[in-house]
Structure formats: C-alpha cells, structure tokens
Image 1 (tube, rainbow, N blue to C red):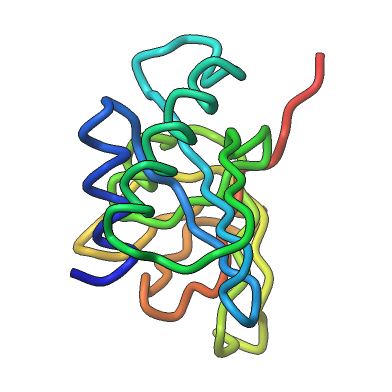
Image 2: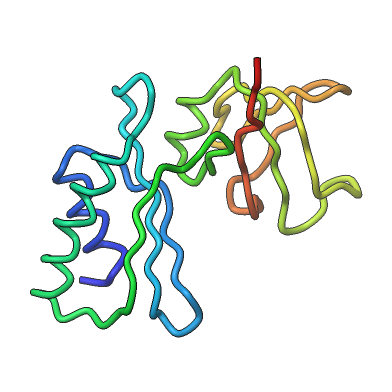
Length: 146
C-alpha cells in the first residue's frame, strides 16, 4: 500500500475526507488537509488533533520515515481535487488553472456548474465552458467575505 492510500484509509476510517496531501521534496514533512462535509463549520483544532494522533501511530507501525506531520483544514480557498468536489461545490465561485491552454487561455474564474458528460462545467462571463478534468492543474474555491 502506498503512502497516499494509507493516509486515505486512515483519515476516512476516522470519518473525515482527505482533501489533499503535500510532501516536502525529501518527504520529511507530511502536510494533510482534511474536511468533514457534514460538519457545518468545517473541521476544527480538535478534529486535526484526533487525526494527527491516529496518523502518528499508524505511520510508526507502518515504519514511514518523516520528521513532521501537519494536519489542517483546507481553508476558505479549498482545493477541488476529486470529481465529487466539482459536484459538491456546484454553485460556488471557483478559480481554475489549466495545464494546457484552451482557446489561448489557462485561467478561468466563474461559477461552478458541476460535471457534464465527465467534464467540469463552468459559467464564465462569456457563457459556459467545459473543461477536461485531466487538463486541470489547480482548482480552488474563491473565498467569500461578508
């Protein structure tokens, strides 16, 4: 089992969603972002502590070599990494950066419409665009402040 699978299994087993994993270049720092969709205000420090404590034990048993483990919420500008994220956050404003330009453009800001025929549908100022998920380099929610 690779590291990502191990982290995913442990985090979901605790009732959380693994949003993203970052590793430092030499793998010395493991940074995890977790979420709990059914929790209205998102994850808090107690959730992060619970996941961190469990992962510390699991990583020791699995003999994973690292120096520091960081567990946090994905933040207001949460990354969208899975197909389910594009469905869940339909109606939200997002920023998407493509790997390869589409019609001379790599950056798109608009309102997420979900998935259509396996493609990410985005409503931008000129109308709807369909983006190939495999061409999406980064997708993030745009934070809203009242």
